[in-house]
Length: 605
Image (cartoon, rainbow, N blue to C red; front, top):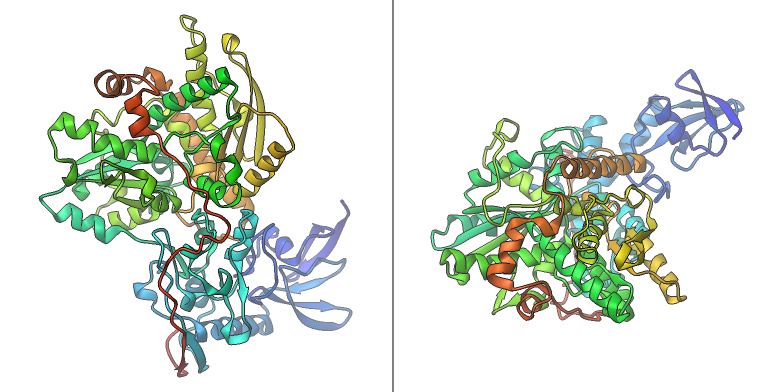
């Protein structure tokens, strides 16, 4: 690739032809602020925050650096008085339309607009003007959409399109412009899959998870209720980031200690239920292979992916594993097996899940996941909510001792741990499938490094010896899921496919910590890679690494379920799905019209 020489702030640098000024400046160590830019996904040049002054052939002009390519001999000034003034005025204009409730906003101190206003030393807004006051869309159990905090950067729209969903788009013009579902419908009325990637991309508090902290605190304060908490595999390698720890730090013991100090009656691990899922799904796979029925078997642990399939590819619902997700398997066992074992009234048990995913909130509210008249899981907290809850309780997370999960639903194998990374489910299931098809043989701890990593679609041929050869695929991100399903429609054969809705799997879930510069795509990929590697290291460090060897899981079958795919196991641990269509049209209250309000000049920024 041809190298070009240019000057950035009077320093000579080199950049490849086709590189943008923004990319060249950042690689040279100059941080140009952005709001609308998402590397490789969104570069409309619309927010104008990345304006720089460029001198070319004796003339000077301001250019949006995210869409302007470098040129030989170009002179760029990222912090000239003219560039700074223009940038400051752009942000000031954004703030005149912004609902300024920073101290009570969930994104306070982690808001890109707030940070940019501070960087530009905006202490008051000198501009007045008219803005429209919108009603907040909170008609669903997973995501809150506050149009009053939206800066129209359209990053949510770009990420939704990148996911292959595209339920968000710009509507109307000028002051009336909104970014949301068609006809400004609620997300509950759109074919939204609840993956939460839009929340991760949003630079402000315009998109946030539906918070359940208050409901959980009320349950903890009620002496009549027995509150159980379960934590998903990935939480133990992501929660530390919210407290300033390096990406991929394993905080399992501190997580348990924090949950105990918050007052939960039992602290269990969803990894235990992941082991249970492995057994049920492995038996289901072998049964379908034997019957040559409904192949490929497609995983069903990711609720965002399940939603995607229900909305866009209902013809593949019969291929989905009927297994409930580990979260839901845990919930139903907590209210049946554990309740019987401890002599507790299931009606007084409250199950809380700490999950990496906003779609888990949708999943917990599904009517298909009601057992014996009760919802399997009562409340779901994202990783972000868990971090806020710990801070609000005044707990110094880093100083906590390492503690162990409670028993019996806290024992997990390494196979259960790796569920949180893309490919982990497949690797765990194959370990057990090998043991089931080759009884009596020395069982290797199977590791498939070709199924790990950040590639969107990974494929492998796996030899189960007596079980025959399997063609498997691992897919993450629903755009890649769409590509895979289109391949299946052409007749391409696979035996098992793992699909996770979020990039990287659960380690990249829409409920995970929101980190610094979201416009650095490479940084996001690196974060997910480090998180996944941390989970695989946990697996390597365990003596117990196969789901079918988990003694707690064996006891559940011995004392309660009988055997995998038994009548009782199918009744409690398996579910059905619903074809929802691309325009579900759920019955939600009508949105009232917006009203215009005047914002006087001089308000603090």
